[in-house]
Length: 191
Image (tube, one colour):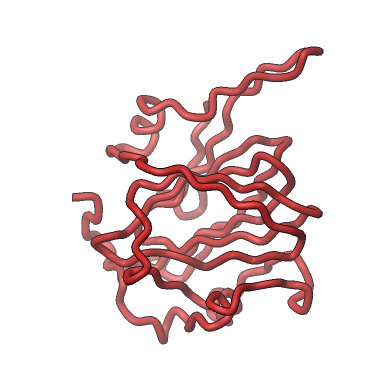
C-alpha cells in the first residue's frame, strides 16, 4: 500500500497494490499497522457503510460535531466519484480549502478523511457503489453539513450544476462562514 498525503497533509490517498492475472485480481484493502504508521496515530474503525447512487447524485458535505466527530476511510467498489474533503478546523492554514480526488473501481484508491473535515462526493459514472469505514457511530443530533455550492469553497464538482441531485437536507446546509465554530485547529479530537 502506498500512502500519499494530499495538498492538506492530514488527508491521505491510499493506493493499495493490486495483484491481477487472467483469473481476476486480489487486493489488500486495509491493514491496521501500515495505516496507523502512515497517519501517525490510532484510529479505531467501528462501522462500515455502503451506498449506491446514480450519476449526478451529490452527497455532502457532511460531518459530525464532537464528541461524535468521525474519521472516514472511503472507496468506490463500482463506478466513479469525485470525492471531496474540506478543512473546517478554524485556525488551520488550510481552513476552507478542499482536497478533491477521483475514486473508481479501476484505481481502487481510498481516501482517509480525518476528524475536522467535511466530506462529500458526486457520482461521475452512470452509478457508483461507495463504501466507507468510520471511527464513531452516527449521531443525528450532532450531524452537520456545509453547503456544496459555498462560493468561498469554490469546489468544481465536474458536472453541470443543474444536473446535480441532492437530498433536501443537503440543499439546506449553510456556508462555512454561517456555520460558525465546529472544530478548532490544534485540538485533539481523538482523545
